[in-house]
Length: 151
Image 1 (cartoon, rainbow, N blue to C red):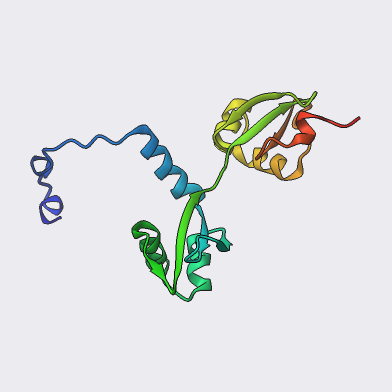
Image 2: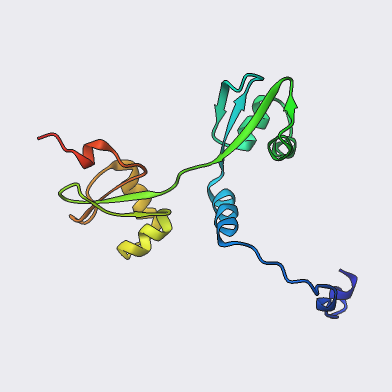
């Protein structure tokens, strides 16, 4: 840091090149933007509780969120409880007016690009379940009512 403040390059210290897989980059990106679901398991691997975020888990157990993250990474237990993190599923299913699947996109931003609009509009229509511009329905899951509509 001292060299950087003086305007000197420290690239000569970083001689190794690191190769990170596309899957790792996507998982880190999803975790950073959308978070994880935390499942709390007892010693028999039964789900005791489920939390929407690491912070809410930490608040419930009166711990720091970094401590919960370490328990998740190390697989260690706290009072005979283990913490398991799962990425939230943020895929968006796009259906046409006749309730046929048009596409499954990884998130609201990609769906917005697909529809040439902004992600806020997509999120609004995801919540409402209404038809967007007389073209598409959006859902976070393949809802059977879209696949097999009842007339």
